Image (tube, rainbow, N blue to C red):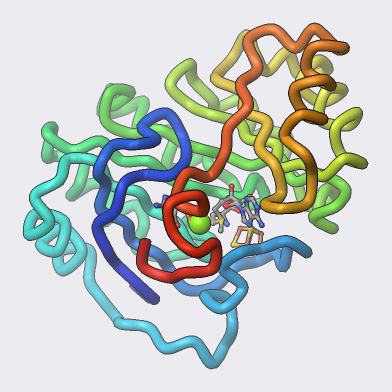
Length: 224
Ligand SMILES: C[S@@+](CC[C@H](N)C(=O)[O-])C[C@H]1O[C@@H](n2cnc3c(N)ncnc32)[C@H](O)[C@@H]1O
Ligand SMILES: Nc1nc2[nH]cc(C(=O)O)c2c(=O)[nH]1
Ligand code: SF4
Ligand SMILES: [Mg+2]
């Protein structure tokens, strides 16, 4: 599997924000979002380590942390992802979070989670890419069918995206299915504007979420 960086940090996003996690960042993506903060990881010239699922599990064990974030790039493009998850899910002490872009089917992973009844050990944080990303047309809407209450759908927004985010949340009744986040494209929208929008649109059960690691460290620092 193509790994461009691996590190321990606090998780800056998601349900376990603030908790320590081992991060595995995989190389390559099928999208090229305008705002992507890890474009470097998607470049053909980006160096990577070729690690087996077992190598990755051994690294995770060596970290001595129980949360694991699989990210990228787009982690679900890695051909051994199911093998990796089969190994990780045998270890009931781990909680695995998969950051995915909504443009790759989550069906196989979701079905593995069903088979293993592993809802306490695996969750998706899936983006719904909005207009400003340039990739709304790539969204696979069937992915919504596989989401469970432990999962997150995240809408990363600029000002021009807010109305569309509210529309999609309502149309697919996402707050009834899973956790829903609105998150700013870093530095591109005032947080106050997002809160005012949430108030005006009575966005109950939707949460504003900020990338904590960009507050703690320089926003483009790698490995944190
Ligand atoms: C780098 S992506 C990797 C995982 C997957 N490719 C995806 O897009 O979900 C991880 C998360 O960072 C978010 N992200 C990327 N660039 C961002 C930015 N400039 N501001 C806020 N969030 C950003 C993405 O929307 C996604 O939720
Ligand atoms: N600290 C920290 N938390 C994160 N949560 C999700 C991340 C990601 O890049 O997907 C990330 C990241 O890059 N750093
Ligand atoms: S899908 Fe994720 S990794 Fe790919 S370009 Fe968009 S934000 Fe970056
Ligand atoms: Mg990141």
